[in-house]
Image (cartoon, rainbow, N blue to C red; front, side, top):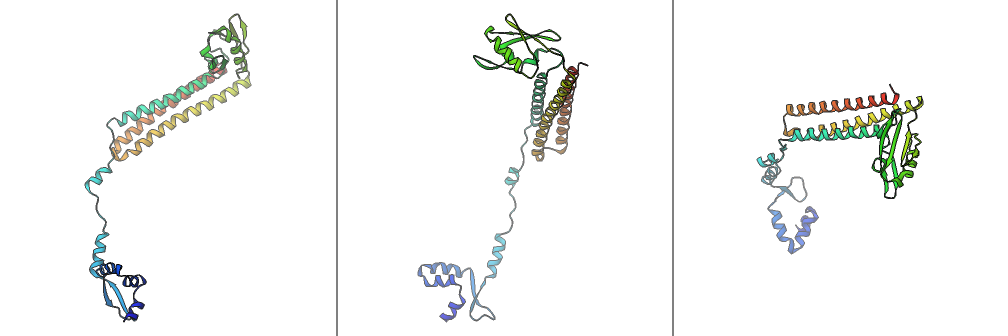
Length: 263
């Protein structure tokens, strides 16, 4: 009989039988299975207890979510979500328009403009600073600028900075100020500058569209917490704001092109 058990029993159970310390484990294991002869087998076999299988199936049955779990999945949308969303979109699009305006002001035109020198960086004893921080720029006539430094000792540094800029302006000293004649633009200059304006316009509109997309993504994230009508209304309002700012960018660039070409 012992030989038959050694042949029929799995190796793990034989180890349990050989060790007294594991007899307790074996007794617990015997409650899980019923030892019955298996037809056609040379020795003793094992079959699981039918009632144990039923219990196993019940144990793995899919449970239902509790009411509290369902509540945790609900997205809580603040009552002022829509207003904050539109305010954020407006701020981002206004920033894009301001950046576009600064870039366009750097472009030289055939007419003198006080802002056309603002982006020039001057090296002084206090470090590098924009020209409009170290001097007053005023328009003498449609083709001449006057540059008066706050510190007369910075006159030479300002002159060198203007000459080194890509504007093609060569100022001359006149006492404690500089006189900067603005030469007329050539046809090639006008064409090149118009291309720069078009590039600035596209960059500005891309920034505006990115702000729009961020707003739409925010609406999508909370779509489970608001009605479809409310979501569509917000999307429509964001699109209207976007169209308004895109038109503003186009109008600014068209005006700059006219200014450059002198039409």
